[in-house]
Length: 379
Ligand code: SF4
Ligand code: SF4
Ligand code: SF4
Image (cartoon, rainbow, N blue to C red; front, side):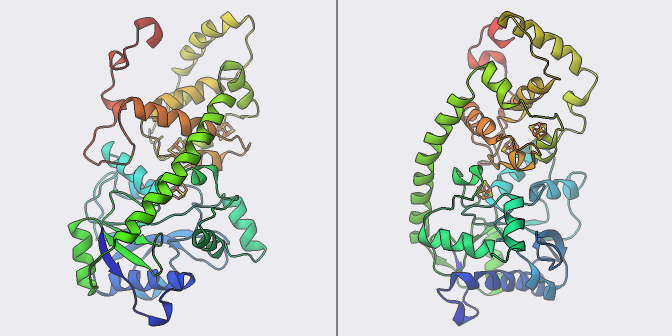
């Protein structure tokens, strides 16, 4: 890969904790040199323990940007991009800072024509892991610094027990399909990686020297391999835990059918959800026909149909962000289900969500015969 080291302040060299300042100077330069007119980024508001999403228009505001913050509060950034570009491309050049899972969901949203990349400079930020929004808030309120905690875990390559489950098993520490990446993994100083000609042009406009960085490639590869092993083991356990209707019913026992998991999911973008429409009772009747074989029928309030139906709708494009789990007020460990199921579904279609912009999502082209199912099985 090629890119540039940011060494505008020589004191920062090798000091990864100072990296935040270097990123902000980089964003400032994007605005000063008019590469973009706006920057959409997590932003520090001292009155709020959680970062806010803001569009920065003045270079001096860039010092409050916080794109590397190890938390995704509420909705993913890709949902914001979808909201501002779905109808028509953004009118002014905008740089958007995305964690790798947010960049992946943006790719899926573009494929579904729910977002438009015209006039956007997409900048991925390396992500070693993020904390549950409530853990993050608690840390800040108690005076602990989540960013430094994450950086220390990265430096020692020991992970963090407090990372969200999706993050402990994440195979995308570095964003794919972005113009640039802010690299903190496998480097001693901030590395801005250029992935597209637009990205390379941007670095040149800012006057940065472009160099090769093979060492970073190797370290990223090692991290993904290590996580891959962990993920395999954990997913196997999760599937065992949830195998069968009884275990699934138990899993969703405390679900209050609030649909928060669906609201926050970047892939669940439908304006009108089938499970909130008048058509839903029909499926409920069909479900009762299946459960009658069990001898008893549990009153499910449509919960399981909703979750299984949602899995069918989003599993081909799920990006393993785990935000559904974070949004659940009942603390249901949803990633145990959507993580492994989505991985298996995507494998069966030889598809990886967020990987290739030019690929068609299987849900838009899938026919029952593709999986060799009989008519009865497909039912
Ligand atoms: S799922 Fe991956 S990219 Fe997303 S916040 Fe967690 S570690 Fe970062
Ligand atoms: S189902 Fe959950 S893990 Fe998958 S994309 Fe949606 S919010 Fe993320
Ligand atoms: S967010 Fe939790 S409680 Fe609400 S519908 Fe989803 S699983 Fe059920």
